[in-house]
Image (cartoon, rainbow, N blue to C red; front, side, top):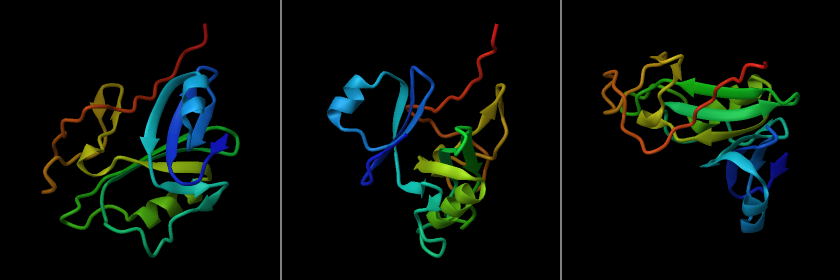
Length: 151
């Protein structure tokens, strides 16, 4: 489902439904979420990129989340170093998500906060000090995606 246009969130309900968009106070209380995070800006809405590929500001590491038209989750992590101008602009990550078939997608915190771990092993190149040195930045929250095996 899609909600709102001015700000955005990404949430997963207790029914395993993805919700992308703005939620008012009543909706955020009444919808039963397993997880809900603030995000922004919109990268893709209804299959259309929302940030001009020639715009989008700084080149930096990026993290994006969304889903395609069949409901499959898309999670993209792009390595980079802001001071060395390595990574993608917001416009470029918008285009990447659209090219991957995103129906809805939003930007999550990127920069040095971007660290991707699979089965306990870091598989990207996080940088905590903008030098290109591989290191993990201390953060207060994470986005964790895991699969549940059917019995």
